[in-house]
Each structure stands twice: as C-alpha cells, then as structure tokens.
Amino acid sequence: METMKAEVGRRFEALYGGEASFFAAPGRVNLIGEHTDYNGGYVLPGAVDKGVVAAIRPNGTQQVRAFALDLDEECRFGLREEDKPAPAWAHYLFGVCREVQKRGGRVEGFDTVFAGNVPQGAGMSSSAALESAFAFALNELFGCGFDRFELARIGQATEHNYCGVKCGIMDQFASVFGRQGCLMRLDCRSMEFVYVPFNPAGFRLVLLDTRVKHQLVGSPYNDRRLSCERVAAVLGRALLRGATLDELEAVRDRISEEDYRRARYVIGEERRVLAFCEALERGDGEAAGAAMYATHRGLSQDYEVSCEELDFLVETAAACGVAGSRMMGGGFGGCTINLVRTERYDRFIGTATARFKERYGHAPQVYDVVISEGARRI
Ligand code: GLA
Image 1 (cartoon, protein in one colour):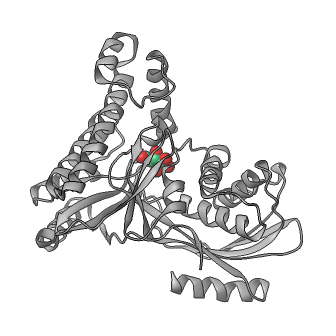
Image 2 (cartoon, rainbow, N blue to C red):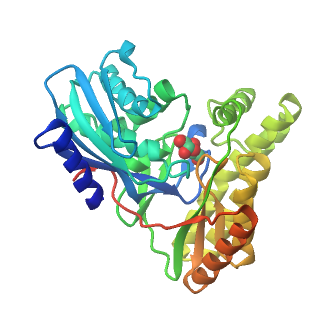
C-alpha cells in the first residue's frame, strides 16, 4: 500500500498539482458462505492486504477528473445522471458519486488518481475495493455523515445500478468493515455481525489463482439470484434463508430441476457456515476444512459456478492432504481458498503448481492471505 501511495501521489502532483488526501480500501477473502449473501444467509469474509489507493482533492467545479494509474487513462465526467462516462472502469466512480447524491449526500467536482493491486477476475473483489475507497473518501471530504453500513450499500447499489451486477452485500461490507487479524461473521438478513479472530494454530491460508476468467453468455450471476428468488416465492418466503430441505422437497414438483439444485446448495450452505464456525471455535481445522470441501461440491455440482480449472485445484488439494479447499467468490474462474496445515504447505504449493502447469500451460498465482484493515484514510 505504501508504494502505491507514493506512486499515486507523484502522479497526482504531476497531473493536477499540489497536495491531496489519501484513502485506501481492500479486497476480501471469504472462508465460507458463498452465494448466500443475497439469500439473507451468513458469510465469513475478511479484508486482505491488497486493495485500492486513491489520492483525491475537491477541485471547486462540478467536474470529476479521474486518472486510473494502472491503465494510464484519464476520464472526465459531470455529476448528473446523464453524465455517465463511457469507460467501464469509470462507472464505479460515477456510480458511487450518484449513489451518494441519491442518499442526500453532497458531492462536488474532484480530481483523483488511483491504483489497485487486487488481482482482477480473481474473485477477490477488486471492484468492491474501488467502490469502498471512493465511498469512504467522498463521505469524509464532503462531510456526508454516512455510517459504514451506508457506505457499503452505496458500493452495492453502484454495482446494481451502474455496473449490471445484482450482487449481495458481502464484498462491500468486508471492504468497509475489515479488521486486521479478524474475519467477520455477518448475518445478511439482520446485518448483525461479529469479529472472529482468525489465527488457527498450525494452519495457513493461501489462495491459488487459476488466472482464468471464463467468458460466459448472458449474466450467470444474476441468473443464480433469479433462481433463488423463484424458489423462495414458491416457498412463500421473502428469502431462502431459514428454509429447510424438507420444505424444498415438498415443492420439488413445482419448480424446475435446475432451480431445485440451486436452492439445495443455498439451504445446505447455511448449515455449513455454522459448522465451520463451531469447528474453528474448537480449534478443529480439519472439521472446518471438511465443510469447505462440501461447499465446493455444492458450488460445482448444484450451483454450477465452478469450472474445470478450479475443480482440478480442489482435487489436487485433497490429494495433497490439504484440510480444506474450495472455489471462492462469484465463480467461473478466479481462485481457490485453501486451509493448509503448515507442514504440508510447501509440498502442496509445489505439487499444485507443477500439476496445474502441466495441464493448463501456465502456473497458478499463489497469494498468502494476510487479514487486514478495511477502508481508511492513509
Ligand atoms: C460476488 C458478489 C457477492 C457474493 C459472492 C458470492 O463476489 O459480489 O455479493 O454474492 O459473489 O458469494
């Protein structure tokens, strides 16, 4: 983050002159509770030590001048709804400005240079990092007075209304509320959460990034959400949260086979998150890991958001005696998250890297997970 801050600051001075304020917001991991947030279920994310850093200063106009350092590209836009800029990356910034305004917050023109080091398409929420950094920054600079929950909702609404993804609240929540060394168990129905210190003795947490992002026709993420909503409606519920497998069986002939499997995954995941948390409390890394494998099976076979490369990495982890492994995030590419006994770590990374490379022609990227702070001024 310090290096990015220096680079962003230098470029800000060169482009716009003078001093700026600096803000940062992280990407996230999620231990378990996948595709549960928009169903009102539980999630267990933590912020990571990779994120977005922005230098920013109000410019006394009604124009935003934004420079994306990683793309070496500037975009200028106004703050009214009809001013939506063309580049996709600028939709995140524009959306945040608009969502702040819709909630009664004052936003005026500003200059900004930003950069990020969350790998894109890895399922680590680079977009939430961007939204949270700007929501946090605008809130401070223009004195909007929003609390952290509202900042997370501003990021989520940006995805919904300006980026076309009907995401849940997990990523923005984790990016805004992250705390060093702690996971957060969030109940996405009540929005109550607890910080869970995460330091399982004798284990390490590592991500293996397949570095593939499958091109998909249509919007499979939004489709999954629609399946869940259809089943909830048949069950006479607002959300799938709290539904039981018995209830699901009872309506099986009234829903499609596909919707049935989607809901079966989501209902099962609720139990697995709680089992995982109980296992962690007992210090039983192996039992926690078993829940991760079960989640992966559900995501792969019932929810169908995995892909061949992710399945291959999870199978390799199992073959190497890794305690827990599963795909992480929205899916269709990106990372696996692995809970590994320290003494098995080197062998696992060596084997997984070699086998993956032999099969797919490139090595997966390895990221050790460092659970870090959420959005902040730096
Ligand atoms: C994406 C979404 C989140 C969540 C996950 C899957 O990261 O942004 O809201 O639904 O997928 O758990």
